[in-house]
Length: 537
Image (cartoon, rainbow, N blue to C red):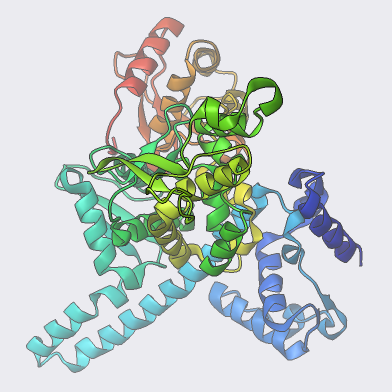
């Protein structure tokens, strides 16, 4: 009953926005939750509803869990509680209680559950192919055809083999051909570059890091960035290639699905669109001007939003008539790739004089003009590309777990904490608090004390991000802060002139025991400033 009442309060607050969502987060509940167990209960509640569930359903679920984990217990140990009398309720059904860090874990558990099913199917298919090989041993041609056609369904991974010189082409081509494997665990291998390494996560991180860096480049021309906020938005073109944008959405979804932070930043309106249940609701809210509002524009394009806000707040009695002072047409002008500046009328009304001139913006219609301007700039002009991105993301992570997130929470789950002018400083003390040491190093070792002294006092913000990139293959801060990372420092021999190196697969910094702090500082900065590419040492 308490949860139901809280749910009513939350829904009421959503209409008036008096309290922020963080006021409803419950750390006590989160600390006590066993996420995997709660996830199974939640899936059962989604299927059968909240309430009393038949005992045979719960027993069958336990048997499935035991079978998958290969932990077979006796029936008395497995079913020692009277499940018939337990009311089945999941805290996941009340997502307003859960902070973004918890929701990220739920999305990852949901992804792992899907990966597990795909992995099992691939193993079963592999077993069937082995049996077929024995039966067809005397028919090598048929056997070869069978192995070729079933190579994908027997591989337990989505395996991408990428040439750095053809990064985007290889990625798009292989994703198109391996669509059926998209829910399998991802493995990335860089080829034809002399690079070696096991993909234990580091190669994935570098792959997505390089990928998204190339996707926002001017050379590809898919996105443009606001000069002040550095936030990405689709580049206006005459006719966008929705297939490319869908594939970009798929790659973004694949990054989230595999637990890798996306190093692209979008305005919050982008994530508001992503969490909408379907495109019809997006259209309805857009027509009602409840989405793509001036507030949304100001957050993503502050200079443009400021001008429109000034227009709305203009005091006509004191400062003069809007039409005379601003001399604006009821139209929007924007840069279109390949066409230059394009002007589009925002009103379907005919000019009173019938001379095909654009209607002016007046005192009376300025409110409508601002609404129409925002809608066209953020949605109408970019609708095909925006919805294509959404379809791509949803094709990978579009499950019940996604419905748990608000727009702000999904952004934090997908992209980590914001970077840029409004971002918070990196809390390297959090990273130091979770760091682990190996091969003779410990927290009080003189080299380690010197290392953290350099990190805290000598490195700029940009160099601190480069250190994260050097060791973990990503400079993004995950939701929850740097304490959610793994960070190891391993002794790599006595004092020498060698640079520090890193095993990005394992988030491990290999640090020689330098004789002086100055030498450590110089060697470390040289290493992080010149690191590029992936390799094992």
